[in-house]
Image (cartoon, rainbow, N blue to C red):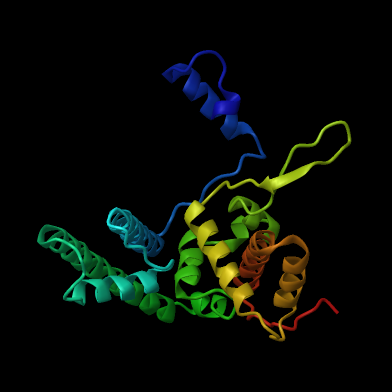
Amino acid sequence: MKAYLTGNKNDGNDAAAIAEARSRPVTKYVPINTEAQQDLQMLHRVRRRLVEQRTGLIAQTRGLLGEYGIVFKQGVSAFRREFSALLAMEASGLSGMALETFRDQHQQLSDLDERIGRYDARVKAAAKEDERAARLMDLPGVGPLIATAITAAVSDPRHFDSGRHFAANLGLTPHEHSTGGKQRLLGITRRGDSELRMLLIHGARSALRWAGDKDDRILRWAVKLQQKKGTNVAAVALANKLARIAWALLAHDRCYQPTWSKA
């Protein structure tokens, strides 16, 4: 309502701004989630919080170990392996109080891993039961997590006029700052659902990593872009493509074809 608000912010001016926005034919409306969508989104939000807690716990433990001159390799898997090995050593060089604290940290990490695993299993079960999610998982870099996140966010794909509008809604399109007939395209806008945008970009990174010589037109295009512009630009561009293709699959009830072309 901010664009239509005149004067200071109060109840009367807010009501007038709402009425003004409601009367404009170009106003975009947000569809109401179904109960099934709300359940899926809640599943994703709770899982995300647990992942953030695990990341924070690992970062804190790394910092505490660094105070004792103990540094592990980067990566969650390497940290788990080396941390467990340290606690199993008879002569770790740590005091009894420090070992007790680190063992408690290790137990907290194991508990979080177990809880995240249970949520992952629930997400996989939800994706298996949803026919739309099953079709989306044919896309490169799209697994149960991303597929269910898309179905939870999009009840009716026809709410968006095109795949580009869906990608723009997720903030994956360039931010434009043009004037005087000169067009300037900057980085992505980062508007919309930050959770879904993040998942799509991570999925695109994974697809780029394992692209190899796969016979997929989209992946071949992304690999060429990666060689020219770098991994970050290619990953975001591929995420944009995946969002558009996902919209097309849902809007037109199609299955993904890796070698599809307009011809």
